[in-house]
Image (cartoon, rainbow, N blue to C red; front, side):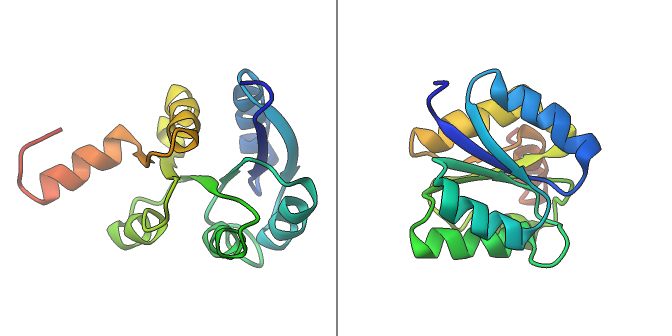
Length: 142
């Protein structure tokens, strides 16, 4: 899958570097940006297959930038990697087709799995989010 082009958006270099190395184990990481406005311009220029983006970034946040890119048809696949697990935010992000939502605490194999899943046309959420949502809805699953 090394030919799958991924653009990473993360405002912290300390977080971005390990994420970049992890993604590069399976995918071609074509760039790294630190804010939503740069994400817009680089995605339009580099035309990645997948964007992996933090949500909270300076200027334009990653969710708003990804929504704009999805609406414009610049990208079709996005995986959000974030510390935020607020149900409203998860729901907003997961309202898009071919979307993944991975908590930074769960990054690692779950990030790679999330990218694989969205590339296969499925949605993906971190197991910890699924477990919490199931517990909140009282169905006892997860």
